[in-house]
Image (tube, rainbow, N blue to C red):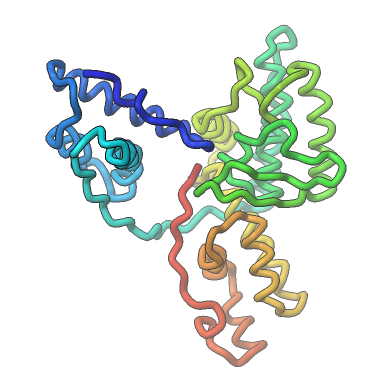
Length: 311
Protein backbone atom coordinates (compact mmCIF):
# COMPACT_ATOMS: atom_id res chain seq x y z
CA UNK A 1 0.00 0.00 0.00
CA UNK A 2 1.20 3.52 -0.73
CA UNK A 3 2.35 5.46 2.30
CA UNK A 4 -0.74 7.49 3.17
CA UNK A 5 1.13 9.77 5.54
CA UNK A 6 2.99 11.23 2.57
CA UNK A 7 -0.23 12.54 1.05
CA UNK A 8 -0.80 14.91 3.93
CA UNK A 9 0.25 18.47 3.33
CA UNK A 10 1.72 19.80 6.56
CA UNK A 11 -0.17 22.79 7.94
CA UNK A 12 1.76 25.89 8.86
CA UNK A 13 1.94 24.67 12.46
CA UNK A 14 2.55 20.94 12.49
CA UNK A 15 2.01 18.98 15.66
CA UNK A 16 4.84 16.45 15.87
CA UNK A 17 2.50 13.84 17.41
CA UNK A 18 0.45 13.81 14.16
CA UNK A 19 3.37 12.41 12.20
CA UNK A 20 3.90 9.59 14.70
CA UNK A 21 0.20 8.64 14.67
CA UNK A 22 -0.03 8.79 10.88
CA UNK A 23 3.03 6.57 10.56
CA UNK A 24 1.48 4.05 12.93
CA UNK A 25 -1.70 4.05 10.84
CA UNK A 26 0.36 3.68 7.68
CA UNK A 27 2.25 0.72 9.18
CA UNK A 28 -1.05 -0.89 10.25
CA UNK A 29 -2.43 -0.59 6.71
CA UNK A 30 0.72 -1.88 5.04
CA UNK A 31 1.00 -4.85 7.42
CA UNK A 32 -2.68 -5.79 7.52
CA UNK A 33 -3.56 -5.11 3.89
CA UNK A 34 -0.36 -5.62 1.88
CA UNK A 35 -2.19 -6.18 -1.43
CA UNK A 36 -4.42 -3.10 -1.19
CA UNK A 37 -3.44 0.08 -2.99
CA UNK A 38 -6.34 2.28 -1.85
CA UNK A 39 -7.78 3.23 1.51
CA UNK A 40 -10.88 1.23 2.50
CA UNK A 41 -13.64 1.74 5.01
CA UNK A 42 -12.66 -1.46 6.80
CA UNK A 43 -9.11 -0.21 7.36
CA UNK A 44 -10.35 3.01 8.88
CA UNK A 45 -13.11 1.49 11.00
CA UNK A 46 -10.88 -1.16 12.55
CA UNK A 47 -8.08 1.29 13.32
CA UNK A 48 -10.33 4.00 14.74
CA UNK A 49 -12.46 1.69 16.86
CA UNK A 50 -12.05 2.57 20.51
CA UNK A 51 -9.79 0.10 22.30
CA UNK A 52 -10.68 -1.39 25.65
CA UNK A 53 -7.55 0.19 27.12
CA UNK A 54 -8.58 3.70 25.99
CA UNK A 55 -10.71 6.35 27.62
CA UNK A 56 -12.62 8.62 25.24
CA UNK A 57 -10.06 11.43 25.29
CA UNK A 58 -7.19 9.05 24.48
CA UNK A 59 -9.08 7.61 21.55
CA UNK A 60 -9.91 11.10 20.29
CA UNK A 61 -6.25 12.05 20.34
CA UNK A 62 -5.22 8.88 18.48
CA UNK A 63 -7.77 9.10 15.63
CA UNK A 64 -7.90 12.88 15.16
CA UNK A 65 -5.05 12.93 12.58
CA UNK A 66 -6.75 10.08 10.65
CA UNK A 67 -9.99 12.03 10.45
CA UNK A 68 -8.05 15.02 9.12
CA UNK A 69 -6.32 12.78 6.59
CA UNK A 70 -9.66 11.46 5.30
CA UNK A 71 -11.12 14.97 5.13
CA UNK A 72 -8.06 16.11 3.20
CA UNK A 73 -8.45 13.23 0.74
CA UNK A 74 -12.20 13.93 0.42
CA UNK A 75 -11.54 17.54 -0.52
CA UNK A 76 -9.36 16.35 -3.42
CA UNK A 77 -11.57 13.50 -4.58
CA UNK A 78 -9.06 10.87 -3.50
CA UNK A 79 -11.40 8.67 -1.41
CA UNK A 80 -15.03 7.91 -0.68
CA UNK A 81 -14.26 6.51 2.77
CA UNK A 82 -16.31 8.07 5.57
CA UNK A 83 -14.44 9.44 8.57
CA UNK A 84 -15.21 7.73 11.88
CA UNK A 85 -17.32 9.24 14.61
CA UNK A 86 -15.22 11.01 17.22
CA UNK A 87 -15.93 9.78 20.77
CA UNK A 88 -17.45 12.35 23.07
CA UNK A 89 -14.93 14.44 24.96
CA UNK A 90 -14.97 13.86 28.69
CA UNK A 91 -14.50 16.68 31.12
CA UNK A 92 -11.27 16.44 33.09
CA UNK A 93 -12.05 15.77 36.74
CA UNK A 94 -8.59 15.48 38.28
CA UNK A 95 -7.30 18.38 40.34
CA UNK A 96 -3.92 19.75 39.19
CA UNK A 97 -1.09 19.70 41.69
CA UNK A 98 -0.47 23.00 43.46
CA UNK A 99 3.20 23.25 44.47
CA UNK A 100 4.25 24.17 47.98
CA UNK A 101 7.11 26.60 48.47
CA UNK A 102 9.33 23.75 49.67
CA UNK A 103 8.51 21.65 46.60
CA UNK A 104 9.38 24.56 44.33
CA UNK A 105 12.66 25.11 46.18
CA UNK A 106 13.57 21.42 46.07
CA UNK A 107 12.78 21.14 42.38
CA UNK A 108 14.85 24.12 41.29
CA UNK A 109 17.69 23.13 43.61
CA UNK A 110 17.70 19.84 41.70
CA UNK A 111 17.69 21.74 38.39
CA UNK A 112 20.65 23.83 39.49
CA UNK A 113 22.57 20.78 40.72
CA UNK A 114 22.57 18.84 37.46
CA UNK A 115 25.91 17.11 36.80
CA UNK A 116 27.86 18.17 33.74
CA UNK A 117 30.41 16.62 31.43
CA UNK A 118 32.44 19.62 30.21
CA UNK A 119 33.60 17.64 27.17
CA UNK A 120 30.09 16.69 26.00
CA UNK A 121 28.04 19.31 24.16
CA UNK A 122 24.64 17.79 25.02
CA UNK A 123 25.55 17.63 28.70
CA UNK A 124 26.57 21.28 28.71
CA UNK A 125 23.40 22.25 26.83
CA UNK A 126 21.23 20.31 29.31
CA UNK A 127 22.95 21.99 32.26
CA UNK A 128 22.32 25.42 30.73
CA UNK A 129 18.80 24.84 29.40
CA UNK A 130 16.87 22.86 32.00
CA UNK A 131 16.98 25.36 34.91
CA UNK A 132 15.84 28.13 32.55
CA UNK A 133 13.23 26.08 30.66
CA UNK A 134 11.37 25.00 33.80
CA UNK A 135 11.66 28.42 35.43
CA UNK A 136 10.08 29.87 32.30
CA UNK A 137 7.11 27.51 32.68
CA UNK A 138 6.85 28.34 36.37
CA UNK A 139 7.04 32.13 36.00
CA UNK A 140 5.01 32.68 32.84
CA UNK A 141 2.32 29.99 32.68
CA UNK A 142 3.45 28.86 29.23
CA UNK A 143 2.40 25.42 28.06
CA UNK A 144 5.39 23.09 27.64
CA UNK A 145 4.70 22.89 23.90
CA UNK A 146 4.82 26.69 23.65
CA UNK A 147 8.19 26.86 25.39
CA UNK A 148 9.60 23.97 23.35
CA UNK A 149 8.65 25.57 20.03
CA UNK A 150 9.80 29.11 20.80
CA UNK A 151 12.08 30.36 18.04
CA UNK A 152 15.33 32.13 18.87
CA UNK A 153 13.83 35.52 18.01
CA UNK A 154 10.45 34.98 19.70
CA UNK A 155 11.61 36.60 22.95
CA UNK A 156 12.42 40.30 22.84
CA UNK A 157 15.43 40.55 25.14
CA UNK A 158 14.86 44.28 25.65
CA UNK A 159 11.16 44.40 26.47
CA UNK A 160 10.67 40.85 27.75
CA UNK A 161 7.71 40.32 25.41
CA UNK A 162 7.29 36.68 24.35
CA UNK A 163 5.64 36.03 21.00
CA UNK A 164 3.97 32.64 21.30
CA UNK A 165 3.32 31.68 17.70
CA UNK A 166 2.66 27.97 18.14
CA UNK A 167 0.18 26.95 20.76
CA UNK A 168 -2.80 24.74 21.48
CA UNK A 169 -5.34 25.43 18.74
CA UNK A 170 -2.77 27.58 16.92
CA UNK A 171 -3.82 30.51 19.12
CA UNK A 172 -0.97 33.03 18.80
CA UNK A 173 -0.66 35.31 21.80
CA UNK A 174 1.83 37.37 23.78
CA UNK A 175 3.00 37.49 27.36
CA UNK A 176 5.58 39.55 29.23
CA UNK A 177 8.34 38.10 31.38
CA UNK A 178 8.93 39.16 34.96
CA UNK A 179 12.09 41.29 35.26
CA UNK A 180 13.97 38.56 37.14
CA UNK A 181 13.05 35.98 34.51
CA UNK A 182 14.12 38.34 31.73
CA UNK A 183 17.56 38.72 33.31
CA UNK A 184 17.90 34.95 33.55
CA UNK A 185 16.81 34.59 29.92
CA UNK A 186 19.44 37.12 28.83
CA UNK A 187 22.18 35.19 30.65
CA UNK A 188 20.94 31.94 29.12
CA UNK A 189 20.91 33.44 25.62
CA UNK A 190 24.56 34.46 25.92
CA UNK A 191 25.59 31.00 27.15
CA UNK A 192 23.59 28.96 24.65
CA UNK A 193 24.82 31.04 21.71
CA UNK A 194 28.33 29.83 22.45
CA UNK A 195 27.14 26.28 21.78
CA UNK A 196 24.58 27.03 19.05
CA UNK A 197 25.50 30.38 17.45
CA UNK A 198 22.89 30.08 14.68
CA UNK A 199 20.16 28.16 16.48
CA UNK A 200 16.58 28.13 15.16
CA UNK A 201 14.85 27.38 18.47
CA UNK A 202 15.26 29.26 21.70
CA UNK A 203 15.85 25.94 23.50
CA UNK A 204 17.77 24.01 20.83
CA UNK A 205 18.05 20.25 20.54
CA UNK A 206 20.25 18.19 18.28
CA UNK A 207 20.40 18.88 14.54
CA UNK A 208 18.92 22.37 14.99
CA UNK A 209 15.62 20.91 16.12
CA UNK A 210 13.40 21.51 19.14
CA UNK A 211 13.00 19.36 22.22
CA UNK A 212 10.25 16.74 22.31
CA UNK A 213 7.53 16.37 24.91
CA UNK A 214 9.30 13.21 26.05
CA UNK A 215 12.36 15.36 26.83
CA UNK A 216 10.19 17.53 29.09
CA UNK A 217 8.53 14.56 30.80
CA UNK A 218 11.76 12.63 31.31
CA UNK A 219 13.71 15.54 32.75
CA UNK A 220 10.85 16.72 34.97
CA UNK A 221 10.34 13.23 36.40
CA UNK A 222 14.03 12.73 37.13
CA UNK A 223 14.23 16.05 38.97
CA UNK A 224 10.85 15.81 40.69
CA UNK A 225 11.35 12.25 41.89
CA UNK A 226 14.63 12.96 43.64
CA UNK A 227 12.59 13.12 46.82
CA UNK A 228 9.33 11.52 47.92
CA UNK A 229 6.77 13.73 46.18
CA UNK A 230 3.11 13.51 45.16
CA UNK A 231 2.25 12.97 41.50
CA UNK A 232 2.93 16.08 39.40
CA UNK A 233 3.84 17.06 35.85
CA UNK A 234 5.61 19.96 34.20
CA UNK A 235 2.19 21.16 33.05
CA UNK A 236 1.27 21.75 36.69
CA UNK A 237 3.51 24.84 36.61
CA UNK A 238 0.88 26.41 34.35
CA UNK A 239 -1.88 25.62 36.83
CA UNK A 240 0.29 26.93 39.66
CA UNK A 241 0.85 30.18 37.74
CA UNK A 242 -2.89 30.76 37.30
CA UNK A 243 -3.82 29.95 40.88
CA UNK A 244 -0.96 32.05 42.31
CA UNK A 245 -2.11 35.04 40.27
CA UNK A 246 -5.70 34.66 41.43
CA UNK A 247 -4.58 34.31 45.05
CA UNK A 248 -2.65 37.57 44.72
CA UNK A 249 -5.85 39.46 43.82
CA UNK A 250 -7.62 38.67 47.07
CA UNK A 251 -6.26 41.63 49.04
CA UNK A 252 -5.98 44.02 46.11
CA UNK A 253 -9.62 44.86 45.52
CA UNK A 254 -11.98 42.94 43.32
CA UNK A 255 -11.73 44.11 39.69
CA UNK A 256 -12.22 40.49 38.68
CA UNK A 257 -13.46 41.04 35.14
CA UNK A 258 -10.39 42.97 34.01
CA UNK A 259 -7.92 40.80 35.89
CA UNK A 260 -9.52 37.62 34.64
CA UNK A 261 -9.39 38.89 31.06
CA UNK A 262 -5.70 39.86 31.35
CA UNK A 263 -4.84 36.45 32.83
CA UNK A 264 -6.85 34.66 30.15
CA UNK A 265 -5.08 36.52 27.32
CA UNK A 266 -1.61 36.03 28.79
CA UNK A 267 -2.24 32.29 29.13
CA UNK A 268 -3.52 31.97 25.58
CA UNK A 269 -6.95 30.65 26.52
CA UNK A 270 -9.25 30.66 23.51
CA UNK A 271 -12.26 31.07 25.80
CA UNK A 272 -12.41 32.84 29.15
CA UNK A 273 -14.31 29.83 30.51
CA UNK A 274 -11.00 27.95 30.63
CA UNK A 275 -9.59 30.62 32.95
CA UNK A 276 -12.67 30.62 35.17
CA UNK A 277 -11.93 27.00 35.98
CA UNK A 278 -9.05 28.10 38.20
CA UNK A 279 -11.37 29.96 40.53
CA UNK A 280 -12.70 26.62 41.73
CA UNK A 281 -9.15 25.62 42.71
CA UNK A 282 -8.32 28.78 44.63
CA UNK A 283 -8.63 28.21 48.39
CA UNK A 284 -11.48 30.11 50.13
CA UNK A 285 -12.08 32.42 47.16
CA UNK A 286 -15.80 31.72 47.04
CA UNK A 287 -16.16 32.60 50.74
CA UNK A 288 -14.25 35.84 50.24
CA UNK A 289 -16.40 36.78 47.24
CA UNK A 290 -19.55 36.17 49.23
CA UNK A 291 -18.26 38.25 52.14
CA UNK A 292 -17.32 41.16 49.86
CA UNK A 293 -20.37 41.14 47.56
CA UNK A 294 -23.14 39.25 49.38
CA UNK A 295 -23.56 37.35 46.12
CA UNK A 296 -23.32 33.67 45.45
CA UNK A 297 -20.03 32.54 43.89
CA UNK A 298 -21.77 31.03 40.86
CA UNK A 299 -23.62 34.29 40.17
CA UNK A 300 -20.27 36.02 39.69
CA UNK A 301 -18.20 33.23 38.20
CA UNK A 302 -20.41 30.66 36.41
CA UNK A 303 -19.25 27.07 36.46
CA UNK A 304 -16.96 26.32 33.55
CA UNK A 305 -15.81 23.06 32.06
CA UNK A 306 -12.11 22.43 31.86
CA UNK A 307 -10.59 20.85 28.78
CA UNK A 308 -6.95 21.95 28.93
CA UNK A 309 -4.82 19.14 27.52
CA UNK A 310 -1.19 18.72 28.52
CA UNK A 311 1.32 19.41 25.78
